[in-house]
Image (cartoon, rainbow, N blue to C red; front, side, top):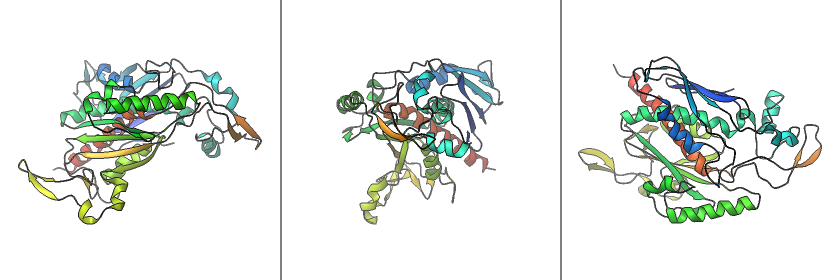
Length: 354
């Protein structure tokens, strides 16, 4: 299984949704770098379940423990090992579907590939695994901050309700993590409506990277946008990724889509950013702007048709505690995967220097 991400900054995750713990090991953390659990916990708190009325009510503190790689408050250069214990798994909620396949889930493909599956919340296919990514991403973010690189993501849309303005200061002040307080209330109301109906809803998450140095990314097969896309598509709920103008570029003329170069502040910049900060697969120094299509969560309370492993037709109703919309919790996960990709790309770029 593909449990390791990165080339020089390598993250390996382990554990299952209903096992005793989940965790990760990071290779490539620079030595003599100040680091503690307090640097990692805030992002885990943003991702953890049970944080609001519009997320799953599973109660996990997601308290991170540093097991190795830090001595007297600084990294040693040895592998950094982190552990997050599972505290509120309810495996009995899944007993009724252990022999049937949940629509939209990885149950069927895992069974085909491995000959069996962990039906307790999906095992490794569960979104619970993304807590490990967020912990690793918090470390990556702190490294990027030294290079004045920042990443901020937010919910741009829930269903057909879009943010009409972008105020980065209000993202953490509403339950859906939208940059528009007025539209956020409409998004929340829509999520509550679909949850009461036993259903779920998708949306769009947008991310902006500021301060990314030019030159990250390598032709031809390691383009920065290709690596970022691969990282984000590894989040199971993401079904589409676009940069800059994205799919709108298909309706534009070249004269409209091209970003004209201008002199700005003693540097070369562009008048527009339809490329999303990446040209030819290499960062240009402009803001990297990308959007992700988030599918509706597959676990819904409605009765659905399915089949068993013995090919018997059946009906199933997914029990347990699940998110009616994943956008608010995808925000920190997306930031983490972007941070991991950029740190790795930055290290690769610096390794080219003589």
